[in-house]
Amino acid sequence: MYRRVEILDFWMGVLAGFFPDVCTAFLMPHPSVQGRPIMGVHIHAGSSTSRHGFLVVGGMHARELMNPDAIAELQMDLVLAYVNNTGITYGGKSWSATDIKSMLETLDVWMVPCANPDGREYCFDVDDMWRPNRHPNPAVMCGGTMNDGSIDVNRNCDIVWGVITGNTSCNPCNETYLGPNRFSEPESQNIRDFCNTHNVDVFLDVHSFSELVLFPWGHAPTQTTNSSQRFPSLATGTCAPLNPPTHQEYMLPGDQQYFQSVAQTIVRDIRAVRGRNYTPKSINQLYAVTGSSSDYVYSRHIANPALYKTYGFSFETGPPASTLPESFHPADPTLIKLDIKAGIVSLLHQAPLTPCALTFFSATQAGSESGLEKMRAIRDEQLATTDAGRELIALFERVQFPVLDLVLADESLTKEAMDLLEISFKFLEQSETVLSTREVERGLAFIDSLGSRTTSKELLTDLDTIRKQLKASTDKSFAKILDGLRGTSAPAVAKKTKPRPKK
Image 1 (cartoon, rainbow, N blue to C red):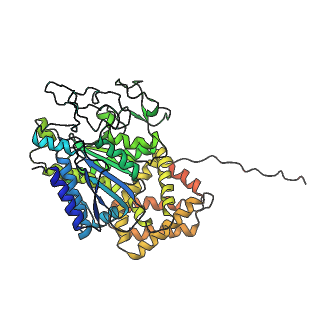
Image 2 (tube, rainbow, N blue to C red; image 1 turned 90 degrees about the vertical axis):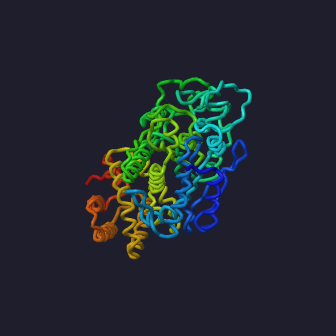
Image 3 (cartoon, one colour; image 1 turned 45 degrees about the vertical axis):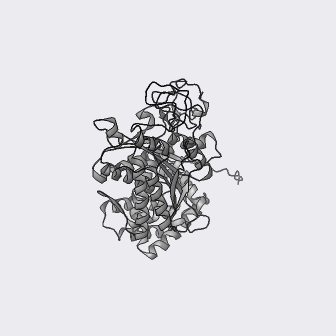
């Protein structure tokens, strides 16, 4: 029913061998404790050199057998859908051929089905409830308990490491043992070192079970108002609880909006497959944990601003069953794997903070990266701070892919979209320049062209909202437009003038 590590690796080698223009096999920087290579597939269709990065790993916990199988199958699904121009359908949820094309031609997708191969093989051969890696520790005598000093590699990362919780332990006989040092294990080192050498925008660690979509923070509740409360100030390596226990970890409002919005869409897309209701929440709302991979990748740019910013997610796949073994590796995981694959594609669809649709249009334009980064900053630091701004973000997330389908079906619309995007980038760089009547009319005509090509009532309603916003921007500077989009208005600033001479 479940595949051995050598079979997963063989599949990836065959896939890369048959479709070298779309994917290549690669090895993570370090082999496992027992010397097994840790293999993945890099999917990178098209010729664009300006891409966002997406890294997904599975099998960090050995007994969660179905996730590595689902990730390996998804690799094949994505490549065949792209090559055959067919799109992907899981149950009641579909992504069009255009969706797949836009994802794979604007993203670097790295997929590592089994990050802990030693543990997986031990599950097959010895103990089907084994969780950690196979770190040798003959000095530890645990009296027949679940662990023998091996390390939970999802507690071994450098994020509030060494702070214990009910689900992170300094006891080497506990199955959540965090290890003798931060990043002591090659399996967790792989996450760190891969992120050090690749620009990973979005990271996903797939676990079981409970039907959840999780995001930071894990060590403490999240808050968005007090930026002085940040993890670098916390004592670590103590093998003591969090101090102070009342600590609440700060997160940028825009980041919280992104995590929540993306998670909600993933939940919606999984539900469409066969009606399963996953729940979005921060990790700490499930339980307190330290040293986890998804918290670590997101924390990197905060601990060291020179490092690339990565958004970290985690899934808990499948429902609880009558027994723990059946919950972690059910006898027939076929339907659950549909949910898993749909959830990953949903995240892929939303992976870059700058929408895939904009990335797709701008991939061939010189200098577009700075414009995209400017849009990203506007969304993150400006729009996401107000209710009106967050509503606008949600609006553009709804329309981006239906609009992309319409635009790519018509060569003249594609050209016009790229021209308008270039105008937008220039406007963003010239904060005092006003948006002219001619430019607004051109944008309105483009929106009308989109509206004439769809029968979707939802899309027509959203396009009408965008039309009204654009029309209201005539003869306004970027700063004034942004105030309006955020639902705020800047106070008038009196201009300094020379005193008028007396007559």
